[in-house]
Length: 298
Image (cartoon, rainbow, N blue to C red; front, side, top):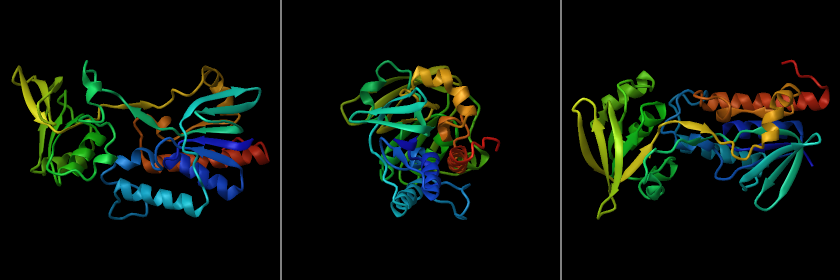
């Protein structure tokens, strides 16, 4: 029995864990991959206080891991398969174990929306990558990025230092912030295609794949050959482990400050490290106040 369980060790979950550690609360934090969450994908994080020149996502998450170590926080590296609420307690099931607690913090982040192409799954992990932290060192590759938001353009700018990048946007609207748009326009290694939809992905005799795409401007099907495809077409909460009973009782559990949905899991398009960190601190403070005095009014 722990006071709290935290699912996810990105900025939100880690911040909650650090604050609970300061309070002397007992808790476990679960992480199925690596510390840092989606921040590992970021080329440059420029709006997190304390880093005037910005900081690469890989560097910041490395500092997260070091802070874990220095605070004696040891994540349980197991995937949570079920979170349930029974008779006033939260129960967690992983592949190997069961755990229970009085409070639960869901900070599992998001998962990417997959390409809606019939045969795209066969290329996952070979040519198609939804998370790019494992690709940070690639060079001299032809990379296709699908999407028009901050993530797509941040990836493109990061890759363009050593690779040739093409951004495919199915509409004419650019959704990224102006700063990223200007950086992409000023890069000689980035080609931007608007009103262009991917229609097919095909194998070739080499390690590359062939993309077929429709250009609304030219009213024609075109093709291009790429080493790497990075879809950045949206994300959704990673909630496959959350039981129906949790969702049925979520409002009363939220109100009692027993259950917390925080960070990217709960914040829709507001996926920012600073927001997630604040969420984690606030959740931990509310847990501590609830434990000590039943205070729930801040």
